[in-house]
Structures are given as C-alpha cells and as structure tokens.
Length: 227
Image 1: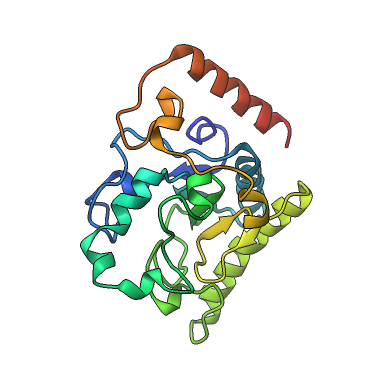
Image 2: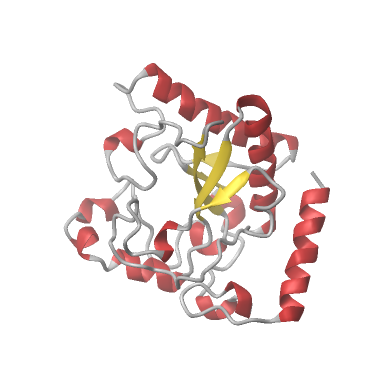
C-alpha cells in the first residue's frame, strides 16, 4: 500500500513492525522493521476509494495500521504475555484469531484510523486495537462526537464498497476493522511469510527483486486508474 501513499490521501503506520509503538499493546514486533503493509487487490480498491471519499467530504487522511498478517505473525501475537493474561480474548466473540484463521492472513482485513484536516488524530474514543468494550463500533455511553466520527469512517468504507459492488463487513467489535466477509475471503488460503514475494516478506527481512517490484507498481497503477 506504500505504492499509493504519494498520490492518495492515506498514510501508513504499520504498528506491529515496532515493539515500542505506543499502540502496540503486545509490546513485541510481529513484523520485520522493513515490512510493508499489503492487501488483497479487492480490498486495496475499497481502501483507496474510501480514502478519496473521506478526504473530499471531511478533509481527513486515512491512516492504515495493519493489513495482511501472515500466519507466523498471528502466532507471535497470540503467544504474548498479554494474551495469556487475557484468555477471554480467545473466546467467542474472539478478539484474536487463531493462526491461519480470519481475514488478516488472507490480506482481506484492514485496520485504520484517521487524521483531521490539521493532521491531528480524529477522536474515535479508543486507539487502534484497544481490547476494551469501548472499542465496539456502536458502544453505548460514548460521546455523540465520537460516535459521529466512527460513523463517518464507516460510511466512507460502506459507500466505497457499494460503489465497487464488493462485499464489506465493518467488524462490530472493532471500530477500526473493515474486512471482506468470510463467505468470500474463506475461498482463499491463509498466507505464510514464505508464500509472499520477496519484497513483501513481513516476518523475515524483505528481499529486493526489481522484476517483482515493477510488477507490483504496474498493478498499483492499474488499481488507482480503475477507480
């Protein structure tokens, strides 16, 4: 997705590439420091369309926090001390998927936040991946301004998906999570790090490959021009 960042109203903040990131509740890097945020091309189109819409209508910049989460990275996160101390996160409704489960290891889930027209974080009530009841998309008891901000974000994604005639699920338990429903994403196999092209390796060090990089750049151009 960094291939779009120069031309589209979005920014990338890959939280789990930094163990010391203030929003990384696990306190450990699940990705290599040079990892890149990657999405399935269908979800990438939705994200770019949503970013354009939210900039045009509200002046916001969409911030991408996490996308493809390979099986190895899921395993790293699920084995951390904080997860062991909160086993209810692994019970229904699960807040963390088992390795190989869910939309993230298929590149079909995106976690986002937003910056306002002045570059300040939009108040969503919690930060990304805060595992609390307040993270629920329609949590009662939050201020009207916070719920309105969440509604703006959700509407931008829902409208983008509808315009592209694609399925989309705004995850009810997490205001930041938008994903391709399991009825569609489940048709694809989950990805391990070794399944990824060299430049897109996330857990191991990415490997330079000019031919693969050119192919990805061409695909990114086609995606942007198709919207």
